[in-house]
Length: 408
Figure 1 (cartoon, one colour):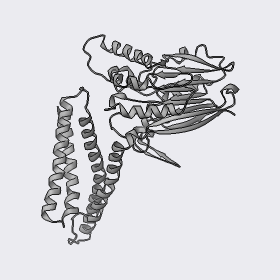
Figure 2 (cartoon, helix red, strand yellow):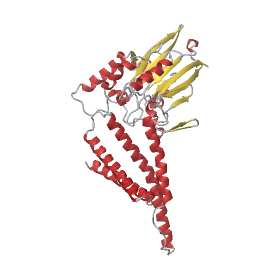
Figure 3 (cartoon, one colour):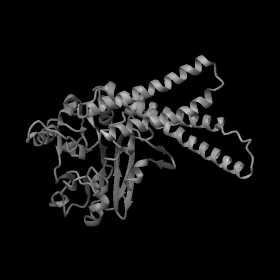
Figure 4 (spheres, helix red, strand yellow):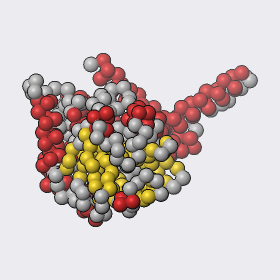
């Protein structure tokens, strides 16, 4: 209860602080317009506080589309206000410095009112992330992009030269309010005519039931040699706090596992498959989720998945969490040529342009988006096809990755 009150008080104080910038910028406007802006500002605060109270009271219940988009819009507004706060702090520091300087020099003529320019700049700069996040919800969430990556390996069997593998990850089907977006994604996937399709975890947000409306759509994914998949951290329902009975969580996991089979996907639970072509072989290994950060269980048993692939000249590993790469893979299994992961989403926000790739998630994960190399080993982190929490994407758009293997 105390935490709840503190958060509400913090929200109010931030809005009160930002209100100072609004008053400064609008002081020369028509009084009627000025009053309308004031009312709008505090109405948004009232809606934000009410939404926070409602969300706290209904915590644990599945969110509907309206609540999801309302909460996200209010969060975007709040985040934009924090940008204004930075300019207000700079303004206050400047005003305080001038007061101290004038007082020390015996000059009492200094006007302590706020600097209009700094307040205007704060509101203007805040409009940039606000616009970007809104655009990310309206357009970015379903702006599917096909990325093509050519990988060269000296030890690739000649029969697999030109072999095409496709990766998708982090569908989070519980976040979709319609089946149409995934139908478009599947159309794009099948258009690539891949030899193999890989799914690297997080099929749902929490419960196996979330996938049910999308089973017919995802069952349509086609590849010459099949679809292989692994589980992600969300697929175990570890974030569900209450269950109706003691066996409910185990039943949910069994249902999740069965769903992969219903869709025609081969779920690799710490196991492998040998792929043959023209008398030559490569190995596909898949492990359960293995996170090298606190709070992420190590379900994966790579030693079991590896068993039987020792003589395979080329190995591909599916492992949801990219921290597994430094945590175990390149320490103990140096002959795994390519690891495919997901998990990070690129945080669904960042700058992703030629020559510059940045997202806040890079301060948490060393490998978080795209291709990485260490010696002969490669890791590719797919930024995901779905979304969770914020129903949008900015910079790091939903990704379908197509790899072409070439013999170096």
